[in-house]
Image (cartoon, rainbow, N blue to C red; front, side):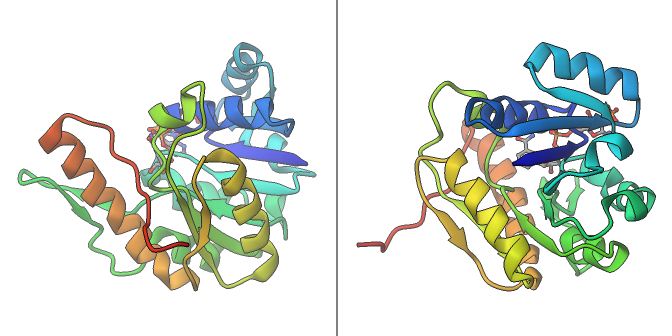
Amino acid sequence: MKVAIVGGTGAFGRALAKRLRALGYDVHIGSRDAERGRERAIELGVQGGSNEEVVRNAELVVLATNSNGALDTARELVEAIGETPVLCAASELTFTDEGVVPGQEGRSLAEQVREILSAPVASGLQSLSAAHLAADEPPDEDALVCGDDPRAKELALELAGRLVAGRALDAGPLENSRALESMTAVILNVNREYGITAGLRLTGFP
Ligand SMILES: NC(=O)c1ccc[n+]([C@@H]2O[C@H](COP(=O)([O-])OP(=O)(O)OC[C@H]3O[C@@H](n4cnc5c(N)ncnc54)[C@H](OP(=O)(O)O)[C@@H]3O)[C@@H](O)[C@H]2O)c1
């Protein structure tokens, strides 16, 4: 399956690309700068180019730009993405003197991305750190995914399930991305408080 990672030159995109490549996916990483996309791709043993180039003919697009750039990037790629399913990994956050808190917008970034794109949008992977993804072994974590479109969610869950040693879990409608994105704020505060890189695992399964 061809997976395009928009903003794939960042820590998260590169870690994701590396793991997906090892799993046999046809991985293409994108950048605002096509040359940077190609250079980073060579380092990872995947394909690369501009964000616009890599999303064309992809079967799944992972939106992994810096969260501040997610909405503008979505606007720029409306035509190139078309109706290809999108997995949004970004989080709407606000950085304050007291710590990281959920974004002030009220709605999640994923919901806003869905309004911009013609494509079906799922949201997920927010609790999966780049550091854990880049490790040799799949992280002992669950990966939560939400969304309203069954096909986008199915593709996202399938990919998520191959990334972690735990479960890929369906967290319901796309509106629940507000909780997934807010959980990033919680995790970042925990990381800072305890000097760790936290992950997420739900209990209660048989
Ligand atoms: N880091 C993690 O552990 C982690 C875990 C889970 C989810 N995430 C989410 O994954 C996304 C990427 O995280 P990251 O740590 O890799 O972020 P990052 O390194 O800050 O940014 C990723 C890439 O986004 C592009 N970019 C930066 N500013 C941009 C802008 N204004 N408009 C468009 N593109 C821009 C850059 O690529 P070019 O300059 O090459 O275009 C950059 O390499 C974020 O939304 C984050 O919330 C991160």
